Length: 479
Image (cartoon, rainbow, N blue to C red):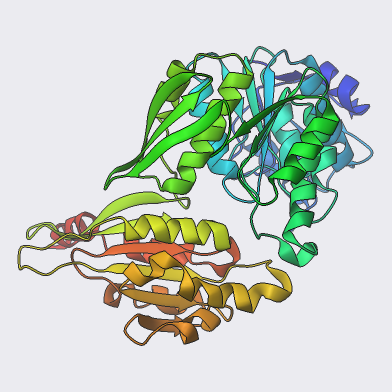
């Protein structure tokens, strides 16, 4: 399929093409580039112009550049523009303008990416659905998502994030959503805002891109919900509040089982049930928000609930795995990989889920433990020490047998824990990864959670490397 022709891209960006070409995709990274992609030479940690020759060697249809890079022929297929970032934004805007898809924009302090994936699974049952990859939610991620959108898509899901004030509104204006959804408001990025109310105002600015024919989806049961409601009302859009106390989209109950979260809800007068595999209660409210989106789009709630049931947490966001320590004796532990992000709200939700899972009992009669390996929560501002200390008072922490802490901020939690729960405290994740084999035993349930910058994903990798089938097969090949 042709996504962009040279003529289309020139018209969108005002650039100059050195050749005629057709691109089937958009790439910003040569490591994931597919043959036929248009490579965008962004300047970030590295200058993308340094990789243009490599991109063309790997089969890129063309490269968007602001100059002909050294070592690249002037006759190579290039889209030469004054500024690559500005041209990418223009390409994204053109991708949005030519699309007939119903566009859903998602933001929130917690759960943006998971909710985006929930929406993808839900909407795929109703039509051709395009969604942002990974966490493509910033000043380059949003236009990349829009530029990758097929013109014949029925639905498109755009994730929008922020680190600083005044970032969301411009991205929302670029996406021009029909439906804008806020997952929740929680302490995150506090170092850039005076208060959680400031975060709510920034998140609510997503509604500024809605018109009178738009739809605003937001939680109604938060302390900051009035801020969200007021911003939604000012946009003139139709309001779709969800949560406890909502008139039309409210949970009846949520039941946490060993294998899933079962959400029963009333959606526009229809009672639906959704089973979310390997999910905690926080995912239940995200799922309810997705059902609100379905209502806003006029979709059948029962079919929407079936689509939601196909979703499972991905790696880094609550993925649950069984790691075999010994295949002969059938000794294993359960790993919960939630290592991509962390803030007080998501950490409390993850600990709640851990508390509700019963550790296994081994053949020898040993009962497994609940173990939490927690990395620093970043970008919390002046309150960071108090917010880390407060984890010791979360109700669910009492059910955790052992807590290992990673990073200077988590030292505040380690000091607050009673001695019976206090595990190791290390400065860096690599220090725990090196002794991963000493941290677990058969029957244990191990939650690993921290902000991405805490690098606790390295501990996840080390724990996965304990998987007996891999090591066992390798040993047998040597013998």
